[in-house]
Image (tube, rainbow, N blue to C red; front, side, top):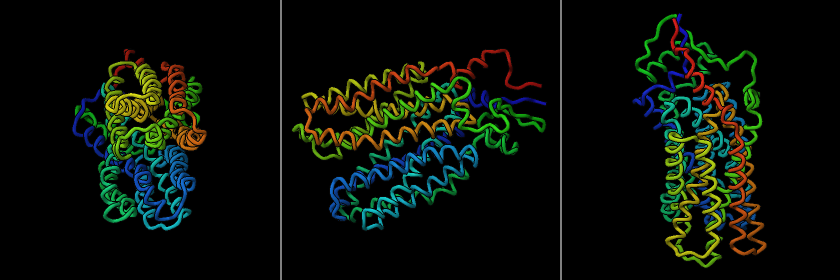
Length: 450
């Protein structure tokens, strides 16, 4: 009988076509996800005019999707550990595609908000699942790069919404950009066929032949045998996934992850909601909000991929602390008069160190929790963080209404970066699943025993 350590096989596998396929599908799903989230902001002026709503009502209409994302991240991130990750991802695609398209058929604020809430369930739920999927199937040496490269599709989706949305709205009305979001539902059969299932789920379900097939594609040198047994030491009978987040000394670090997610998502949505308005009030002539969306999201891509590259070469925790420090500095400097080219650089840095840093924080959470509870861990952190996303437009809106100096508004957005840096610095990296497994690899236990 051979005892196969699936962790070690996944960690030490060389990048091959199988990894590329997982990366392609996860990135494509995130591109659609990013489009669906950004599309409401792009179409908002036209929606307000069409439905005759004021800014306050429009704010609630937009935030309805954020409420949905909070519940979706927690529920659909957790349920994946029970029904399988492929089914959870498929359910999310159905939710965000069908109900974003349905929003295009609405003609009143309430119905629009309901459809956006339901779409938000899928938008929020798919994130922890694809992060967990990419983390599980990435070689350890390039794991951070692959997760952040995949998640940079989120920014591609945002840019796609900005570029495509303007033309569609002018030609066919605001409804068209929502109807276009229904197309991904057609890809579900291909996603179900191409994406591998989570290995812990397959092992728990007794589907060992499927585990062998996945491992053969993951690591071609693996030759399945009839008596192979698969080791997942963290799986114990009757153990609730949510309990795993607070076991083995991970409780305090779990709370610190929640604080970091809350603060980072607060910054992301504060900037996406109020950056253009704040800059316009300061007298800057930078053209349309489209330029801001593109620069912010382009910076986010650079920050995500660059942060992932650094995280694979240095301690990911230290990289994150540095990125949050950069966010604090760059966002604060946005409040001071600078030449327009410098302002564009600062906006790009703000995107890199907020949206980009959020993606690297997802990657760290994926590496921190054991494989069996990874979806749950990322889902709860993302769900708690969503409350920061919901609060940000409201809090900054109140500050803008108080007519404070520009610098004070940006300082208010930058303070969460300092808090997030402190929270990440207090995470006990020794308790992470990746650190524990690396320690186990240094022990003289082989991956395959006869």
